[in-house]
Structures are given as C-alpha cells and as structure tokens.
Amino acid sequence: MKRIALAGLVAMGLLALVATGAAYKMNRFMDTPVALPEDGANFEIMPGSSFATVTSKLVEQGVIENDFWYRLYARKSGDASGIQAGEYRLEPGATPRTLLEQFLRGSVRLYSFTIIEGWNHRDLLQALHANEAIVPSLTDEDWPAFLDSLGAEVTHPEGLFLPETYRIPRNTSDRQLLTQAYELMQGVLAEEWQTRGDVIPVSSPYETLILASIVEKETALADERPRIAGVFARRLEKRMRLQTDPTVIYGIGAAFDGNLTRQHLRTDTPYNTYTRHGLPPTPIAMPGRAAINAVLHPAEGKELYFVATGLGDGSHKFSVSKDEHDAAVAEYLRRLRQNRREGR
Image 1: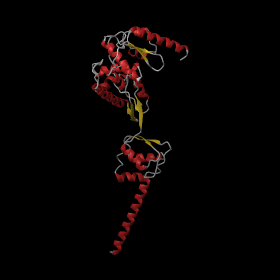
Image 2: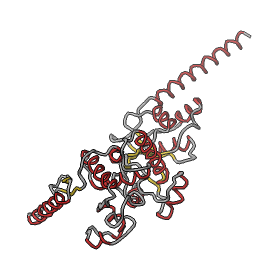
Image 3: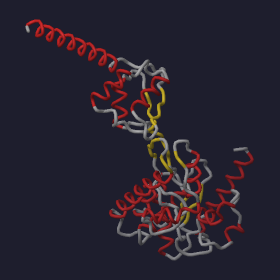
Image 4: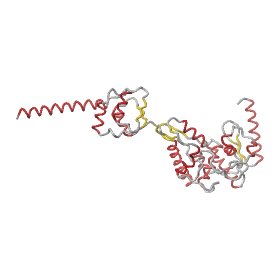
C-alpha cells in the first residue's frame, strides 16, 4: 500500500511539473513579441471566423511560428469565442497576448473621411464612393427613401450632413456614415438654434441651414461670415433680393461649366435669387457650424452689398449704398483684368 501511495505521489508530482512547465511555455509564448515589419502590418478577421482560423492565418502570414500554445491559452481562458471581426493594425512590439486583447476589444483600424464645408450632395456621394474603406450602396434615386428612414422631414439631401472628419472602420457603408453625419448635424443645429440671437433673418432651423449654406459658399474667411450674414439679413428685412451667384450656379446644376453669364442671371429657376425674392427652397451646400452660428448671430451694420476684392485672399468689399457697391465692382473688374494681363 505504501508503494502504491508513493507511486501516486510521484505521478502527481510529475503531472504538476508537466503542468508547471506547460504553463511556463504557454505564458512565455503569450508574452514574446511576434514577428512584424518595422512599419507594422494589416490583419483582417472575417465575420464568423473561429479562433483556430485566426491563429492559422497568423501562422500563414509569419506573425507566429505555430498556434498550439495560442489555441490552448484561448480555450483555457475562455476567450476563444470573443474575438471580433474587422481589419486590425498590428504594431511592432505586439505579443500574442496583446493581439488577443486587441481582437477581443474590437480595436480595429480606423480610416478618415472628411465632409468639406461647401460640398453639395453630388460632391459628397462621389467622395464616399471613391473612399476604399466605404462600401457604396446609395444612388441619387435613393435619397428620398434614405432620408425618410432617418426621420427627415425633407426629401432633398442638401445641407443635412455635418462637415467634419469621421473615423470609421473598413467596410463601413455610405449609409452608416451619412446616418452619423445627419445625427451630428441635427445636434449642432439644435444647439445653435437654442442660443440664437434676438433678431435673426430666419424663422426655423431648416431656413437656418438654407441661409448658412449660402454664407458658406460666399466666403471661407471666418471674420466675414457674420458680416455676410448681416448683409443677407438686412436685404431680407427690406424685401431686397439676395442676388447671390452661388444660388444661381446651384440652380444650373451639373450643367454649369464654370462660366457664369448674364443670361444665367436672367434665367429663372427656383434657386435664382436675382429673379426671386426670399430664400431658395433648399440649402445649396453643406454648411459648417461656423456658418450656422453666423446666420443666428448676424453682425450689425448698414451694409447691403459686398463683392470680391480680387486680392487673392478671398476677401470682400462691403458697401452701404449702390453707388459704393458699383465702384467696388468696377475696382474688382479692374484688378481682375490687371491680374489676367500679368498672368496671375
């Protein structure tokens, strides 16, 4: 009996030594840096992949030599089923343990997509479909149904998506990104509307978007936005036509070739603010928060006109009277001719 007991103790000791040795090897494997290029590598886990599939792929790509200890650790820890699909960026210095933590957190690689102030909806859709990380699905014909799914009260997409830089994982759909941009715009618009000034030229948040989009197209200079909003506010108050070229160009649409003519200014469309009073029916571009704020806090003053200076810095000359404005226009045209002669 003593010999049997002794043999049992020896066997248990051997098993403990084996277990201790296995644990040591497993932990050494888990904490040893994997093989990666100096600039790292991309690694994609497809939806529905098992942990064994993932580790086999790591072996195939030379990141680890074998996956025995990896799979054993995942089964022991219970983490084998918790990995998340997506594209990951594997950085030098990573270990099997830190990679597993990354896969469990779903810390996927993020790409940037920026909606630019002043883009129209055609620019936006084209940029979305040109981005390699975004899955295209939306067409021009889909806008009304898509906007309805967002809860929008309008069927035209212009102006509804906030200009911002968005960080997205690969295989984000255009609809997913636009949903985020729409919700952010609604939030910004609500915040700005709550803090609007006492005397403003618009009567609703949507009218704010319309006028802000015009301000956005008229200037890229931060200090000019409130002044231009002030000019438009006073013109609307006096029942003067806005007479702003960007609305005319928007009304021409994709057929515009870059040359705005007198005939264009005389041709009536719903967006021609030379032939029609008040605001156009929809925004003409994507306005940023600064343009929205300018419309809701227009600068005080008496100016009713503005025209580009032609100085090359995007600035404008503001005028109170028509005579002053005509002189400013003449100066702009003179400077424009001079620049052409000098090849500038």
